[in-house]
Image 1 (cartoon, rainbow, N blue to C red):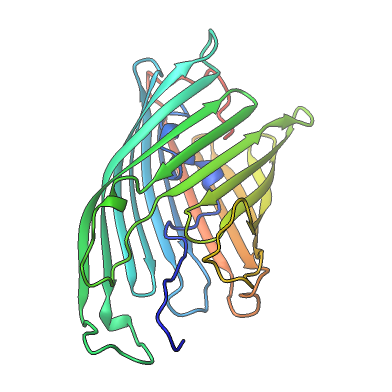
Image 2: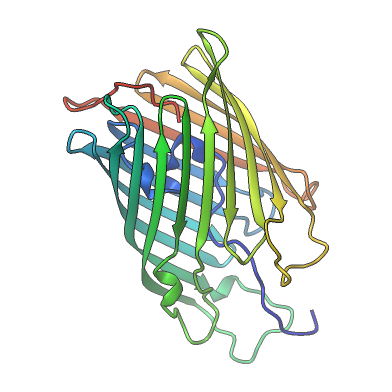
Length: 311
């Protein structure tokens, strides 16, 4: 606290229900559900802690060219203390058929968009204010891009993606108050295992890294009951994939555990809720994290439901 140093941390918003709509972490997911799909989520993280992250997003995706092309529009807003990010992306995915009926696809996707980065100096209350500490709001708008690859069939899926690929090269401000965007990388995979006619089991993982903060691993396990209810949970912790000497040496590997469910309230309406509770150093300080998601499918004349879209 008596010296000046760099601070390394993850910048992208955290989310616990990404497994119900992968467009938030991978542009190649666009069109995966093979119909017109509207999805939104709201997340309040670390309730009880002043300035805790609040995130929301809205995504619309569909197919074109007989399912060989996926298109998606995504808008998101994320606030953390005095910092705020507002982003919009248009995503395109070319979906290669890997078998005759198109149930197995390899999708190559990219997204182009803009990000408004802002910080409100009125919400900062430093113990030792600098002479040139600003008041009011600073903001800037930068272009951005994201890329990804996504494979899926009736039982298995895997994806690799990266974002902040353009904004990392755009210097945001000279005064250094607005954080410079850095690339984030996502690796995900999962499998659907039928246990009986009405019960299916879906384990999956997600590895997240930004070469700044700790690498994060999510281990997920969900059960689908009667094709009407997903119920399960996740465990999230830090993992060491490679050396990061700049990180604090006594960081805890423990992060959080998640309980989640998603209900098919109607045939084309899905409603999800998840609760994250800290198992690491924040245990006892945070009131937990609440996340709500809603998905709605618009059946059209060109909708293709040749295979069940469980992921």
